[in-house]
Image (cartoon, rainbow, N blue to C red; front, side, top):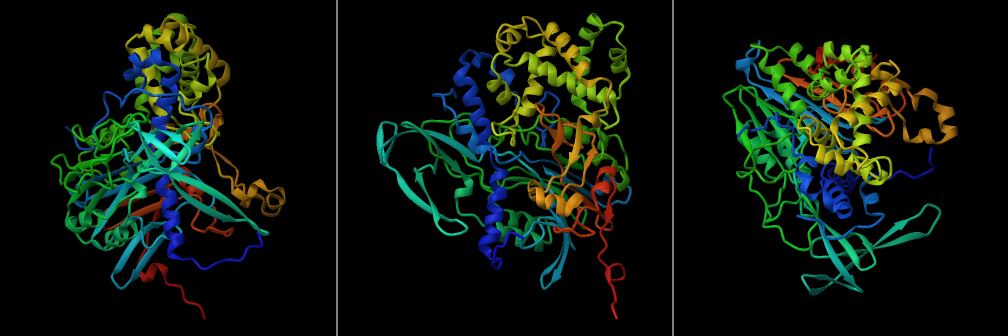
Length: 607
């Protein structure tokens, strides 16, 4: 179609695809830059920063229970990092002691950008030392998430601190660190252009890594574990072949990037958890860019948090805090999804696969419950006869697509945020509320700012209200009142699905001719969708441009070593065909496909 000559797929292509995905799941330096930008311009907020930048919610469970900015970065630096959406996910594993069958149940649903064609495809790879099934990526040498005949595994992003930014002074072909000049290394890349010619790009490199931004004599260099020699492909091969807990952990010793929370189950009834990846040790927090400082090696496999057969009989990870005394992870999600999953597991004595399916489809928001409880006294004070205020008193806090209460709640949060946080500076406001400059990416501040909002309301922090609103407001109550008035006018009694929907757009749909040629194969349509940023059915969205869901469960997996159920979106095929988009409605309805592997189920005879 593009008149390009196809080249054979090589190992370099596999590694390139892996590197691209590793980068997208490792970009914790986005939060460093957001802090850096905001506090460089609003230094007076430093004394409130522990409230404005919360680590997690007070109720957030652990997976395993138990700086100051230097100078203003200037325009342009944040454009560098906006290519990716943050990946979030859920996984959990339940001991057979808590299940109806006596077998472990492992569940996983990675939250990634929903695209067409889809990210994953289901495979059963059998031959030689392999008998493994699950989901894979184009070009991947095996199954990324799935099971073999002995073990099963699932992954969520850990958000480990694997990147650091260094501010350096550039002087010609040298850079200055701690008053000492060091030579800048130059690396030249030549990019061939269709039709002839090439573009030459020169990269400057420091002892920390490449200079990713420079302006005048200032440069920012990036240190990332992805620059170290990795053995991810080898790790994946070993993982596909692993037969027990020890072999599983041995395989993960070679896992470098991206760092993942990996849950485990086996046919012998064991369940476990292992944090994977190269995670550096260092003497500073990693929350802000620094002028100097070297990593002091990496955490060893034994030092990385791991857990086998916990007494409580289950393990849950949802991008939440890992362990109280582990310092390799700072920026995490507030923990509402993990908290809700734990609630639902603990509410059942002997859980079934059908109940695990219901957990994966759960749309009750514990954040909504907390937020409405905090604002309701103010709403009753100012709007005692309002029927929507009275409706909130009886609401079940479920963010379903057909709920007008869910729509009003979401808009109330958004409008209250916009009125409170930096209304006098839209650029800072967008950064703080999680939006990155080029309209594509977002940072974890999309969640942190919501957590800060409810903390300020619950604790009646009028001092912070005045500081962050630029003096526009002096008390919490007025912000809530104005937020409710705005939210009601926008919501207009419409259900949440009017503002929040799945819309799959193929990259080629940007071409008018191809759009006419392929029609709805490239644009399958819009589908109202429930869930939000804090529900188990995580369905993230842009608060500045309500509508299209940006990140959601890219696939769902449930395994108990007898039965296994999967669903991915939009379909199994990557080219327009009967199976290109035939899973969308099943996925939206919360339906699954039983993975059949026997010859009776899959054998087809042709004359």
